[in-house]
Amino acid sequence: MGSPDPREVRSAFVTDVGRVRSANQDACAEVLGAAGTRLLVVADGMGGHAGGEVASRIAIEAIGEWFENGGGGNGEMLREAFEAANERVFRMGSDAPHLRGMGTTGVALLLGPGAAAWVAHVGDSRAYRLREGRMEVLTEDHSWVGEEVRNHRLTPEEAEVHPRRSALLRSIGVDPEVDVDVTPVPVESGDRFLLCSDGLWGEVDDETIAFVMASDDPEDSVRRLVELANDHGGRDNVTVQVVAVPTAGDTLELPPMPRRAPPQRRNDWSAGVIAALAVGVMLVGALLWLALGMSS
Ligand code: MN
Image (cartoon, rainbow, N blue to C red; front, top):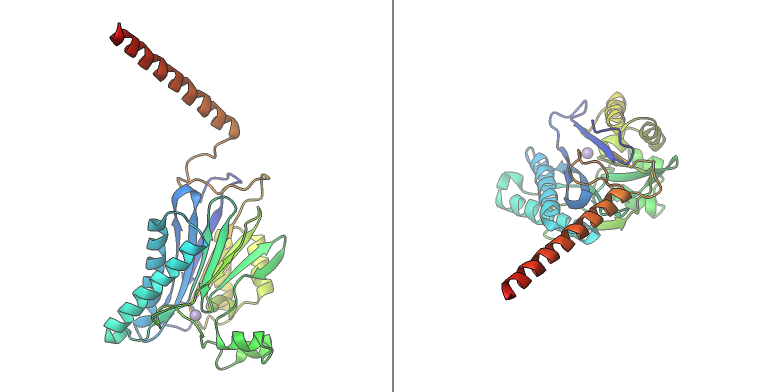
């Protein structure tokens, strides 16, 4: 648990095998970058016995590495990270016969500098935002039923029980190229974000998800949501990540990279500038004194 500093972004994640499957093909990670940037990512693998597990793990690794090595931290970087993951999973799937055809979904939230943030996704893992009690889905499922619902050929209720409900239209690692959806999602103080695999939203309705997100700490929320998915059947692996952006303060600043460093106040900053100026003046004085001493 972090310190109680209200400006600190709090986050938590859980991945669980569920009640029916024998292996967990979901994977997730949270990676901290430079200058308080932060990346959360969920992947739900598919294909073969080993394939799904490998695909989601490799994708998470590739996206995390791209983030750590990529500097900047913006939406374009996030797209490149997904493309790098696609390349790596596709290559492994092509090289190893027992991994052939493996793939994975991917959904990521990048909290960039200041209040800038982006969501990227491929497949049917989702991102939600809870703002002032209102829940919003930030992603459109790249699934056959998702497309049918958007085109009004199926109702959401029909989609939920449709035999093709898990058929994906896009995934990471199945084809040499991937089409990634990247959306800017400016952050406001008090926002909560949730990333999850279909093992959550397939079992627990959005109202319940919103209620649990709003009422608890991230640690409690993710644990409770996984419990609910399992109580409702737990037919799939379930992965949940929650990020809570603090409410205090008018300006939002994401915390600096070392969690133990206290937030800098404005007057500390000006004191630092004055100290730096004083040191500078003394250095110039010393150099002048040396120069004058040598020239005489
Ligand atoms: Mn799943």
